[in-house]
Length: 394
Image (cartoon, rainbow, N blue to C red):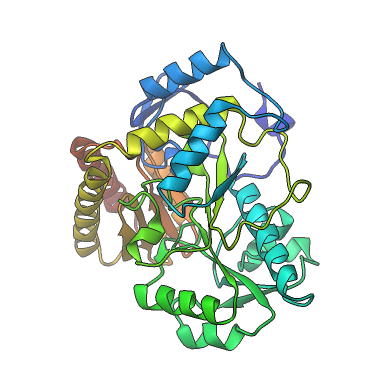
């Protein structure tokens, strides 16, 4: 098999072929085991091949895998109800990925604006945000490296500085129909919005009658220690976009819109595969696990342990680590400029640990939400060995 010959060159792939996974570990085709602190970029919330998830998918596959959205299916109805009752008490639209969820949210905002007046179409998003690579989502993604080669982008998108209320206020006017915010920026290197800023944003959206959209594709589904990241801010968005962890490894995303943002009518939007019985049955397993007594509290405890040990590493290697940032089980280690995050991640791989490179020369640690203390200890030891090995350059 030759992946380079037959697959488009769209990823900076590491030189390894994975074959199977279980819990917090994954094995390559030669049988070597790795501790997975990437979780498929925050996808495998319950680890690899969680028994209940595997059992449920098998059972549903034998019963009904796909049905057109011209008809109702019980898994879709049940998952929509569970998502709604545990978030915005609104209505749900199912998709297959995070980018699709953001495209849906953009269409909701644009239609909402049209119901107010013809020229209410501007959408604001933060500098260094990442919302996806499809054209609408890309237009909201304020990172030059992603946008530059695909211009002209969709018109009507403008940027503001994260956590800068003055910058935010300067962009608002009555023609703004929506604002998209990652409560925790993932792709840019784990940057958290602060509570004061989010509260100001909510107030401005109310004042100018614009929808507040939270992109929780990466930071939602228990990743921060709460079911949804917005719950840290004592603020509710009008629209919530989730994906990644929702299916625990099976492709699914969802957009939840409150009553104000519930503007779609038949024909406005659709998805052939969105909300199929197989995906929704997987989503139900994940939701039920996350909502078990003590599960999210345990995520918080494990996250505090990971953060504490990463901070100690920072103190131990101040000449190699620039900064440590994170919340829950979503952490970034920003390296000094002389050390490449990609090469650092490669050396971690060589030593049996998967981490995910991100912007600002940062490596992300996104372990499964079922991670144990012994896994954290093991990961820290590998990181320490890599830091000891690296000099000014790997």
